[in-house]
Image (cartoon, rainbow, N blue to C red; front, side, top):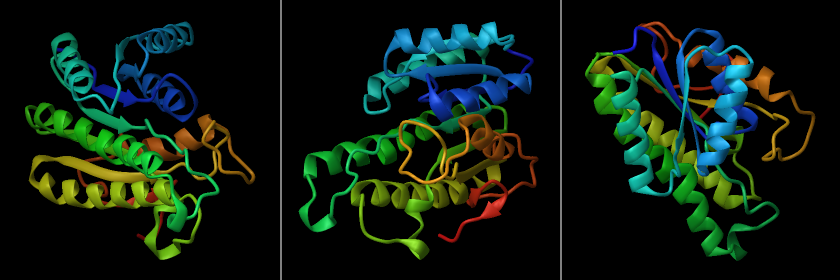
Amino acid sequence: MSERRVALVTGANRGLGYALAACLGRREFSVVVTARDARDANEAAASLRAHGVAEVEAHQLDVTDPASVFRAFTETQRSFGRLDVLISSAGIAIDRGRDASSSDMEKVRATLETNLLGAWRCAAEAIPLMRENDYGRIVHVSSGMGSLANMTSGSPAYRVSKAALNALTRVLADEVAQDNILVNSASPGVAATRMNYGGEAVSPEEAAEGMIWLATAPDDGPRGGFFQGRSVIPW
């Protein structure tokens, strides 16, 4: 079993996911970087090694494919003997400028499959591994656009998927409250990634630094919260 804590990051081949993996690596985690394409995952792992991350492994993981999800978590357990942190960063935003009353339902379905069900599948695989060591941290990468308190129109599939992801966060956080597993949602704010919806953006690295505290929180850290940086976002 690895003496380091082990973190798996979905969607880690670029942008925010890659920055989150790099942050964990700098904190001496063993990092499992995943991507839909194995080549992308391997390239990200090679880049992290070149930038000083000592222990990094790459796996193909498509969050919409249950077999792929199962395989990645099984291989992580086989390699390291543990899993301590899951950051679900994989996501899509494909209905910009659409109205809910005239949505392309195939895009809605694809968005929910990735942003909600993908994270759900990963959490379902991660939690039994975390329970083995009575320790776990799960961070769902959400968005301020999923805040019901601030909900407006536009990009309905994306908004609904992130609001649903926040609901999943609350459900799971309560379910594992006795297992020393902390589950929280985090918004990166407006980060300069391919999913940027416009506005003044911070770098992926700066956004990641503002989120990583949830992945390294102490046992008395927040449970079932929704944050941007360390500020609470209203549900």
